[in-house]
Image (tube, rainbow, N blue to C red; front, side, top):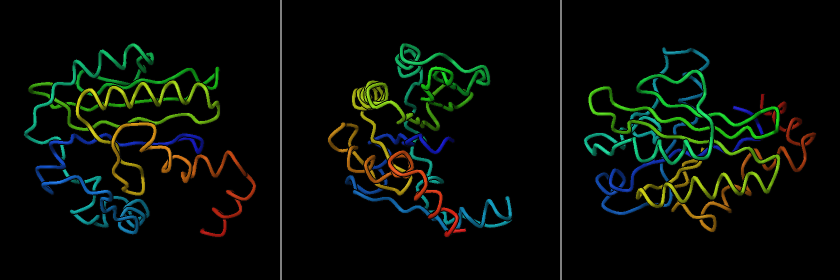
Length: 186
């Protein structure tokens, strides 16, 4: 992931309602557990309540094909996808580093995981891509979650406060301060 990309994980509204009976504003992410996991790769455990480990799509059988067809209209397919793992990648040479991935179940091609990243280096291009992805999510009754666990309706108005606080925006607004802070955190 590039530092200028804003990442959103897509979660089906039905999966959230199945677990909580309502749509909470915040989901738990075990940031310390993930840090230990990557430091000790596969030895440390991540809390099972972590939003990234919950199987939100399980048993919903939401077909990937309609979503895949819509994303095909926005981005070219990447060459590393497979029969059950769809990947798209923008034109990095033209500073359009938007990307998307959908993982499906092998038996019925229903969605298992869905995530996309918006390249924020060009505000106009970023707005076009992000708005299109949010429309797809809205039409398919899906929510989006940022990397802090904030759960949002897929609308620009709901996503904008999260985007403005993102590390991608902090980096683009003041790269030197961002890098200095990252080094202090190490």
